[in-house]
Image 1 (cartoon, rainbow, N blue to C red):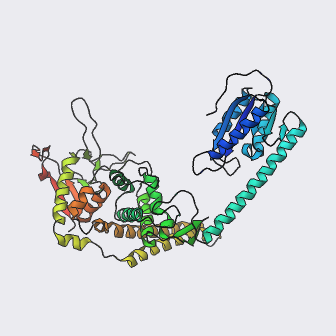
Image 2: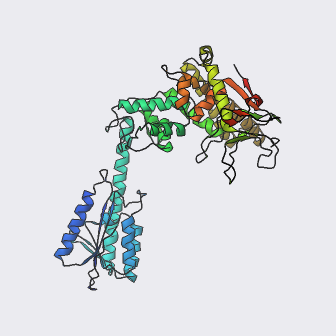
Length: 490
């Protein structure tokens, strides 16, 4: 925030100090402080009254910078208000590297009390004269040229570093030390755990909740967020790849994950997207979504909570909906059942099934990376073939009708490959269970998405039949398990 001094007489020397630092990784603003101190000394030596100090730290002034210059905007507001005659800086690039901004200031000099830009090395740009305006424009042009040169040098260096597989710098990546290439083993183990859980069916949201509950900090020592963990799991850095402008180079740092794991996670994300998962969608709240069916009409039941009212509490429920929201009929709309006792009943039944070790052995897949690789490669091959159809159509190798037909066939083939990969991944749900844990123990700490995937391994559907008599009581609920039918796969 700018610091305004008490009102001073209008001596046409009312001075504003401005300082800027393009990049400050430490956050200590030492260079900005030095600039302001130098400007203050210069103003004191010339007996210029300082009416405001403004500074922008870790913000560029060239066209390559995307950050807003907050204090610079406050400086312009003070100029528009007629409070400033002189802008005092250490050098022109601290104020401008963009000609369009200087032109705005030149126009303000025509209608406000602003008269000149002054540097602490004695260079004065009198904006009330043509010579001064010309000199200021030349100074900014030189600053723009230097910014372009710096940008090219930086890009050349970045490309060279990428080709050598070197770290690009910046904040410490999670899983590595500050040098970006030495493993931090504890964090690397967390990444491997998260990848395994995601591949095995847990959602990123569930994993993040668990990490935060366990007190596992992020690289910056903060709580995890879904976005940050998602970026880590899908970032190729963690499979030993350095990316630059879409090109991949072998990295100098050791990988934490395998390429197969990366491709499985990428495929799971695509599969989730194809099923309608989107950012901002409410998290899953119902265990039996997709498995519960109405015993009246055989339509799928969905979670639909009842809101609290004066004479009744809120309640999670499964309900058969009559319409789809678009005028279509999907069910009878006459049946609902409380979710808590229904989910408890199914949970106990499923865990009882898994108490037989033969079931887990039968369902647990072999650790077959060749299968995963073949499924991923087939998926990618079909995607590439579908994409090539566009080029064939553009080059008149296909007619419109042929293109439409081929596109439909290719899309079906891509979906088939995606479903095959998804089914194989879903079958790996049991792989999440640690060797020293039972499935019951894993269930107690796993997220809802994993639990749902585990239920789906052995349950074909849960049929909720209409209750024709009093519900009775079961486990403290008004619920009769006799009207629930579980159809098993095994």
